[in-house]
Length: 132
Image 1 (cartoon, rainbow, N blue to C red):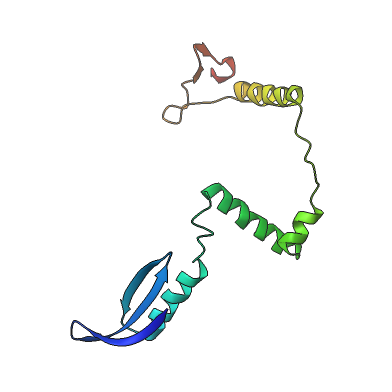
Image 2 (spheres, one colour; image 1 turned 120 degrees about the vertical axis):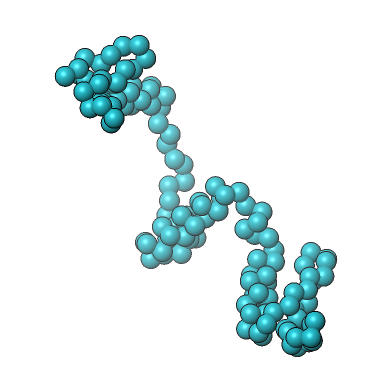
């Protein structure tokens, strides 16, 4: 990799030449600072760490970093302090919680925003609590 002052199409430019994954890459910049900034950004992710991660993994990594920063510890310490085995919610409890959420959603009165006196329907049944 190198940064070189050169003449490109009659203008003085800064040329950056770098080899990435076995292929030569070359870009031209108007200032040396822009050339250095681009070179630093390429070198920072030259291993493809972020590009090899799914968006979900990227969000998880950033969330872990934010949580560790909030706690004032390193990510490694945050992982060591977390429980080794997470206890998932049993299916019967999950179904019970889901049924409660659905029940409260059905009994909650809804009215149309365009006509507040018109009750909304759930399926084919008009909710009695919506009738004025």
